[in-house]
Image 1: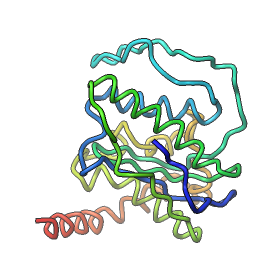
Image 2: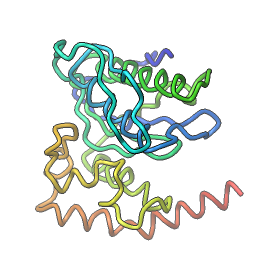
Image 3: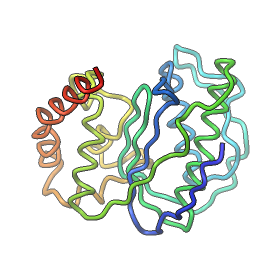
Image 4: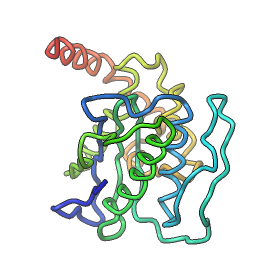
Length: 221
């Protein structure tokens, strides 16, 4: 799958990067698929070596064994500021650190995930609806509101009643200060006096976000 873009993304700028399954079909079919997606996303932040499993993780979350050299460390291509994985799509809020960093990163890790899914489920053909989309963040306000939008996704889609309980987004990482080394929330959180202020910033929009989601479903109907 060729994910390289005709229009280059600009270094030291932040972008909303997203994509969904072909024909709006699911791209995740079990917890182990979400886990593999995130593990590959973490791997390719600082490595060029192939990421794979000798066996796929079981549904009981037993980890597989990683293949490929872990010695080929590189400077990070991007910083991940926020993310959310949904059954049929994903959102990333990222900052590009090197020229062509986002395109190179996405090509490696998305190709790896598609390969994993096609082998695991004995399927063929594309998994995603074309190349990923990348929308430039134009201001600090845009950045803050987009982080809120991304984190509200599982709530407005009724996948969870508590955003902190949703395992497949960066929201809970914000309350840990990005201790996992994967998410870098400071560019968002520096605009707030405390994490509680950010939590309120997100929760204040819950009702409006739910109403927009409902209107979207009525339109689709």
